Amino acid sequence: MYSSHSHRNPLCPTIAYDVCVFGAGPAGIAAAMRLAAKGLSAVLLERPMQRKPWGGESFTGAIRTPLQALGCWEQFERAGHRCVYERQSAWGSEPHVESSIFRMDGPTWHVDREKFDEDLRSAALARDTG
Ligand SMILES: Cc1cc2nc3c(=O)[nH]c(=O)nc-3n(C[C@H](O)[C@H](O)[C@H](O)COP(=O)(O)OP(=O)(O)OC[C@H]3O[C@@H](n4cnc5c(N)ncnc54)[C@H](O)[C@@H]3O)c2cc1C
Image: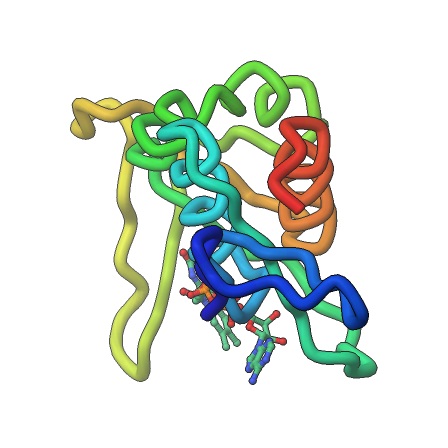
């Protein structure tokens, strides 16, 4: 972690940040964006790696609350992820059917996870998170 109050050597310039966040997944990106919103400088570091192709994931409607808090909800709605009103899942048992009619937080989203992460990163960069 680098502190903005750290000693700076003019012969060896360093860029100082208040916080260094390791891992540019949704949690890391959200943390960096929230820090930036509070006026702290944050750098987000991702390890170089070849990611396996990442399929879709499902989010409940509860995803709206954190995305609104980050100011990314409108971007999410425009991104082309699929909104579904009923889903079935089976975890080694009989299929479980869930209808969004019974959920206060609205329908489920089938999300292109790579695009979701990429959009969050772009939003963070646009706010100069680092
Ligand atoms: C097969 C599978 C299916 C899933 N399906 C769903 C689903 O349908 N719905 C759902 O809500 N959730 C699902 N999940 C869970 C969801 O993917 C995770 O909850 C979510 O990715 C966690 O986000 P995160 O930011 O905490 O971590 P991650 O998304 O894992 O991000 C962590 C990041 O940190 C980076 N990193 C790690 N170590 C270092 C390091 N030393 N230095 C720098 N960077 C580093 C990694 O490269 C990665 O980019 C699924 C998970 C799996 C594995």
